[in-house]
Amino acid sequence: MDALRPPGPYDPTAAAYKDWLHLNVFDHASGAVGLVNASLHGAPGAASSRAVGAALFHLPGAGWLGNLEVRGMEEAGIGASSIALGGVALALDPATGTAHASARLADDGVEARIVATAVSRHAAAPLVMPLGTGWIAWSGVPRLTVSGTLAAGGVTLDLGRASGYQDHNWGRWHWGDDLGWEWGAFLAPAPGPAFVLSRPTDRAHRADVPAMFTVDRAPLRRVFGGAGVRLRWHGELGGYPRRVPGALAALHPDHARPRLPAGLTVAGGDGIDAVELEFTARAAVQLVTGDPVRPGYSFIHELVGEFSAAGRLEGAAFACSGLAVVEYVA
Image (cartoon, rainbow, N blue to C red; front, side, top):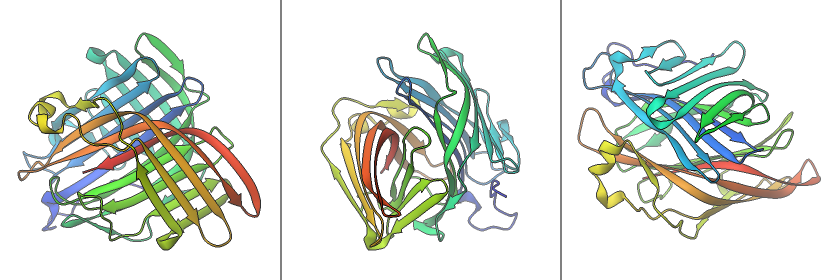
């Protein structure tokens, strides 16, 4: 059963507690890519601890729509596997493998109701992984079917043909530590494959832990790791990212135009199967994350765009393309 992992009453690391529910939506018909996140930061019951909700959607021709909401943790509705704020909520139903997400951000003209149901089994990192001075753990569902609607930018999209990706991260770390990560979800339209990349790094994107690259084309799953995964970031994304929340962004004008990659090449193989994937970014949003218990900030960059992939799986050649989100954190 997937559920939130709050610290116990005598956990000495409770102040570094983080719990993160995450849903991505890829609307292949319109090209829209969205993320709905709900997360907890700091020890439960502490006045400084925060709950954060994000609902951000990139629509071709309209750009980024939505926003990020920050509340005291005591103001959030927190269940065994759900986090609800005033404008953003995300809940997991472990019994059915379903994620329920909603966003109502009137000032930003965004309203969404999304139900995403798992069609692939859970994937998970093989071990708890070091991150900064702490650690992170991860589990997720590479592909979900989606129903629901998104109203944003003066248009209403029926998401019935979209693809979904859902994951859950938890652990103990402090924002502002020497940490980063590289992660991506790349989904072709069903019944095509879903690809997931995950690697914790330091702030300079040096990695002591090998990358994990998962290929999921139900019922087939291949997981490449260690020397079997090669990453190459390339180019520089032009323009300025959308930055949220605005109040924290204003405190960090030196991060208004970060150097972000324009693309990523991922190659995975195990001597039997082999995949090469090429991602091209079209836009980015920067989430400024402040630690609730000590001075420190990290910057989560969500890059959206398109990808193509080709290779061999179970001895048969394949090629596909689709939509993607890549996180580049420093």
